[in-house]
Picture: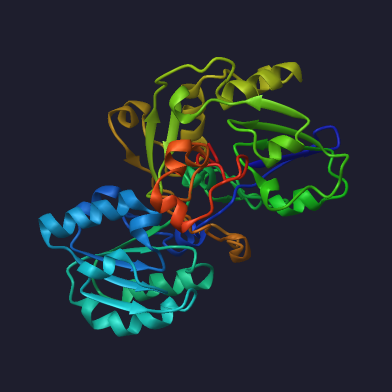
Length: 378
């Protein structure tokens, strides 16, 4: 989540790596309700269409829910992917279609899907931009209840997008009305004064072109970005702080601190301390997760859920209240397609996990500092 400040902090811009086109899906479903799939739906609904994703290794929890549904409720699964996937074994029908061409292959499944009583469609980054609207049109034409899930790579990536961590968005998928900078544009900007990076490692792939940029990093590990940073602020992991997280299905749930790490601080506390030194503590307000959540309830569409309800279990947000009003920038949407044995910074820094046979046979072991942040956008 890179943040850029320019000209005496007169301009603040944020960006987050988008790995699925949630923005287009929310826009395509504008004016409707109950059409964003929940994790419970994956265990309870009667039929599923998986598009593009190798679900079992890229989204193992969602895949487990569907497999349990097949065993217990005999759910029907349909697959449209570039290559063979685990879901083929129990699928009613599987179709091979190159990434980005899957929508054209759906006509072959139209009659079979229309005969189902209900359907959940899950799709990855191969369906984006105009294809998302065509997919929703396809679902509407089936004449049955259809819900959707845009698959994302990282924990709380959905929360980051919901909070407006994209140059063209404000919280709740409201148009910002200004042309902000993307992460790459920030890194390439010649007039950049400072870059504040929270839980990301953008310099693993694209270094900053200007040596005069002052880089502040909040992270858990000494990544490539940390090696370039002027100031490193050690941040706590998800298990060392309180707050909320929004999962891939848009369900917000409570985080409760399980342990305290010596020296590391929660991101909210780090931001609060910096605001205090800048004389902006009063503007920012209390550095309390509950206070922030209450502000989110008023600022982000669909998040008006009492914290007491979130504490008892995950509650789905409902951001589909109207047109988004901005393009989703399909050129910025791409998944790393990492899997159980290759993804996550926490996993990359674990000697035990890196020693398993699947890790060594499917992907080169990390050299020690590389990797993408598993908890990006927190």
